[in-house]
Image (cartoon, rainbow, N blue to C red; front, side):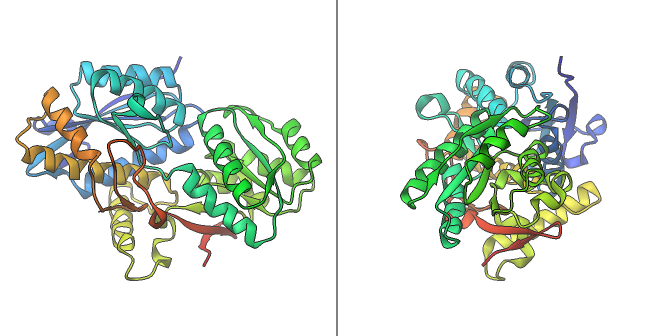
Length: 383
């Protein structure tokens, strides 16, 4: 059974809830502090601490955060969401670390009419996802950047291996569409579970297909497994990934096997390498300062910045909802907050400039992606 840890975090007192006054606004935060997705969930938590330090109130109203650990389990994520809404009376939920968990929360958000800002890449069309928006860049946008890079290298055939879940499906579906348009052929579709300790059988099939290049639909620490296995089997071709791999644990576990990896990511990961006139650069550098202040170290991942951006989206929308005279803690405020979130315009964050629409889950465009290369353990911007 997943261990659920509960924390009360008062923004004005930087997580010192016991001595802080009651909050005017209330955020429910769900992440994975334990289990196989914790390599992402822990950075998400640190990103929230940076956000609290950066913006502790909205329109003079303090913010309270109730944080729960879902143990990397979607069912627990859904139960946590229901508790946060029914018992803690939160105005919005931010979460969680894995796509399956965020999809589970989305069902509760829809049922209870509570806004959900997903920090994992999750997409539900139509009314099923009407109460959610998603911060990470959509898979088609990011995968297309990889395919464009493959095309310049003369790649004709691509081997694919990914998670056997919603994220693996998203990447594969995006890859097949982009590859077909670029005149490439995807020759494998191998899958494994996030908790698997070996992918030898799947990688043997990928190598046997003799692809010109390999890309994975994985994330975090478990995402390094295919690259390590490919290196062990003598694969020497180019390797690619997605923005879900920009994580120090991935780099540490992958070691020499992931050297030279090309992947798309949000601009925040190479903020200091961006042009001075790029508006994302300033916000990304502000995030780094807030993260350093809150956590005592500089950020080394892309995930904590998604939580920071989620907080910016919430704060911007909350200010507009408050201006409409809706009162926090009420169903009317949740509706007003939802309407404000899905009508967000040109909000500059660390990963991009966000423009949401009521009928679309994603708010990113081409400004939210760059291509980076892993060189000696560091990500370098590729022109």
